[in-house]
Image 1 (cartoon, rainbow, N blue to C red):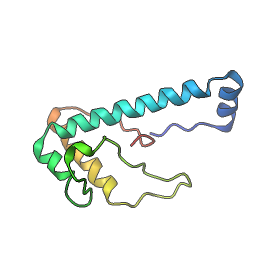
Image 2: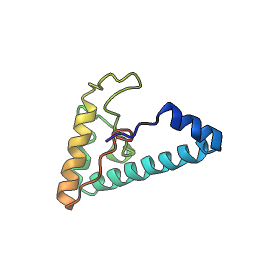
Image 3: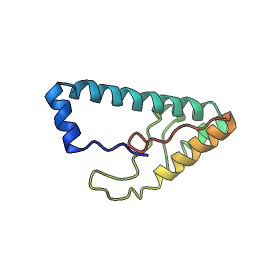
Image 4: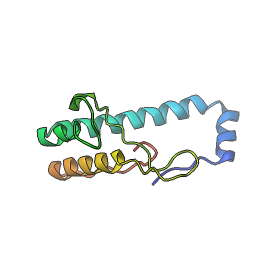
Length: 109
């Protein structure tokens, strides 16, 4: 589930001078999760190959950095791009094969 930062929380972070630390922490976590997803999918050649097929269409599997577009945009509009469900399905299949379940973070995913 997506964590929501309230205006009061943002003000408190600014007042305490913690905005940069907050952003760095969440960016590092998003990068860690993306790297994990990437490694998991690339571990399986048949899944990696699907990264080059429609609707994902990467030139090579290794160019995918593990990023999955968010479920909504900044206005709250639903992301209807077909690449998102395709990537989610690849990651889910890789997790199932590896016997893992990665906690979903829609903000990062």
